[in-house]
Length: 549
Image (tube, helix red, strand yellow):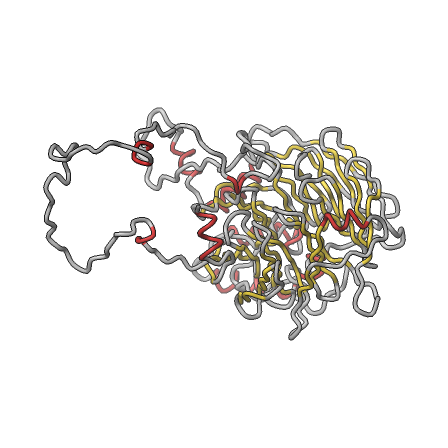
């Protein structure tokens, strides 16, 4: 009934901003689990932040990678997460414990990881300048998928809705449909522009319901196809797209595209600005443009699987877009009246009696007799939105929510609880505590966790010096390409106060080595008092001048 009301009287797409989710560190990518109860966000410091989407609170933080997280995917039952980072590593995580189950090291950067929709033992990986790879987690083996042209290895790939087929697309516009189990070629076609020129395939996305999928291409047009027609056309077919969606006025290129949960709408994020375009799939008309903060660039877009809610990422912050909810109590009680002031109510005779003694009892027939039937209030009917069209029951082992320990600000003394030191440690700031956990685990003060198995994936003819697009665009210190201006996070920082120099580690800045590092740390550890203040500050400023270009 609720679905009927939403489809008949309400719009099934978001219309305005509904707040933000601040992950403390810079967010780069996000994805909902199958039910939309949890949102996983990959950050530039390697952490994965899992949000409880109902309470809009952080449910778990996994210190996953050292380098930025560039792709995430939930398993079907929600118990596992697979992630990829810019240092070419793919990892599988246990969501409840936060432990790493397996790790794979690739020779080139990873653009996308995706679980098989029905078999979480298989993971599809799209490396740069390489054919897509399908991993089998149980035995750590991999299969390189066949490509149309060995000289063109800019290939994107995606499982279809049920994982029966894998769709791949290359820079020459050729789409291949492969059988997942045998990797046999089932169908193929070429995406062409109006002048029969080919255009590069940027991404392939499938709807959660129905057989439709979209192809985002370099000619700035989003083409929507029916998967059944593709299979019917077979090899070298010429299927016509159901819809062609584009911004004819501004010729906007698209960063990320996806379907709504019911598959009736398509959202595309602009690659030029923080703007979301929403089309109705059946008609192809543009129904809404959502504008974010001017000057920000969009990184990722995800549509909630069940509700008309969109999560978008720009400038390291997750923005939530939803409908404007207006409270209407008459929808629950048709005779409900809203009063401006108290009104004295006159009780009718026998109105609140359990049984009306004066009421004559007519014979019960038809609908009245049905009221005396027993109503089943114990069995739970499956929610249709959580079940696929070929399923009748929900997954009883699914992980919908994460347990959250309450934060006690002023705990009382408990003789049976942990010592005060442990309580103080648990109440420290979340960011600082996670950093200390990393350090303490490195020092060996905590019991070491079981080290995950790391498998090296060897790919023939794949260059080892490729730089991930995230690093190339952001001007990371690791990037091999020469960036214009001062690289972000390398020598010196204009935004930081010269009186509070910071020591950076890893890819976030230039590490200080040897005696220089010890000298700066020693100077920072000593408090500035009295006449030493001026000398210490001048010494620090001279040291900073040496490291500035």
